[in-house]
Length: 614
Image (tube, rainbow, N blue to C red):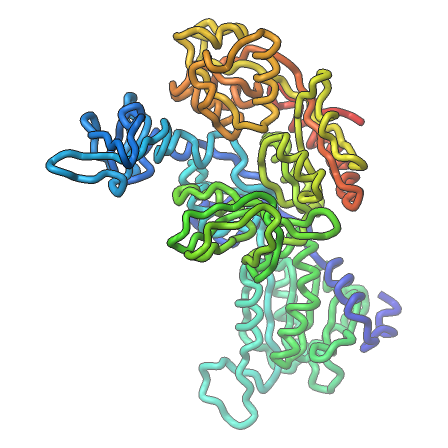
């Protein structure tokens, strides 16, 4: 580089130094590692469940497994005696005639009798198959830092290897005549070499370090060590000797290599401490010459090199910290104990932060994996009303909040967006709830497939002024066992006494679709066995059918395909995304990814889905 000497110790701004550091990021490489050793690694792609969690119907409590009907009519004034029951512990499998577990504390022993003082509904204290994770569902997205609960869920779901971003190999070379190992008996003039300890510990989650013994202030010795190791390095890093003194061997080495081997991008940053930093390339490899003072090393590592990390990995994980937010829905609590509610927080209208609670079951590992916020409800509180300002622990709270109807294609889209530097926090609710929340400014983005009275989708509740991005069309229909043993073909079949149905939750687009079809056929929901049995996702409905809990459910073809059910098409519906005007750039990012060939191929490979073009 012919003019490199002109920028020798020409101090640049911090912003320019960060830009140059980002330009030195190596090309991203993916590797597959065992799940057990993937702690703190960053996923290169989304990861799907390989089996159901749990994989059998299980007790969620220590107590008595019963048919729920034995408790009907029980009250404080009219206790009922348990006559038919089986003692179970948490995690025990339930038998086919057991659909409820009555906790030990709800049973009172009197005169040798077991009495209960309240009724229990079918499904109470029961962990259904796939309650935490369903085979084929997305467990973690791309660019997700794997934490202990992530590994636990992945292993439980049969995922034993994961694709992660390979950590670049950094060769660290301390320099200086006076530098010695810290464990050495120090003499006058000796300096313990501790900078490499700080660097490797501070950045160990992101780089694979090899620290070499200190090199004396000898130009040829340094060149020999660098040349010997550069072939196996993604980045060369020296420590000390980067200033302008006669003993600064790193400066001498880089200055002496200006005949085409070295490309010096900067020497000096306008910060204190940390000013004497070199950034460039040597023989095509990124070269970082760190200052010698420990606090200068700290400053460069945290405020300059973080730009390189963000460029390579796509984001930098953040720790939990104190924030405040509004509750997007009611967060009740029974009181008496401090309750830690997992949830999702994100930006909504006018930059406000909104907190949405997730599944609160103690066995729901997925609620920890999905959460980016934790709300502690005091023991003397019964919870919070919707719209209450609360203090909680959170991270990534500056990402936009998406509230949407559960959809696997949307999960794939959100994961793909992360690869393009677009990060969105999301929580799944019914379509009606999603549209209501965005209309009230409690989310930045909504996803819905709400059937309106005129036969269109979402128009009856579309938020005024929002940016609509049509997303996918998908087939809805009846999911039944292979070969359709009960010969379910139409809505009228749901009325048969030999058919057990499983429904979606109130407010979901699928529930609205079902009720619309029942109304057209003049069918009273009360005659449908299982109409009140609600599940919160298409995959959960499919699992209820597959496990024999129900004979038929209404859902999307993809869910039937994943679980291995037959599918009887009913309607093709439209799933749309809505963005508040403040998030117009995010809408454009979504459109861009939807036009990406790789994403189009993903949607085309999914049964029952068609990507919509604007």
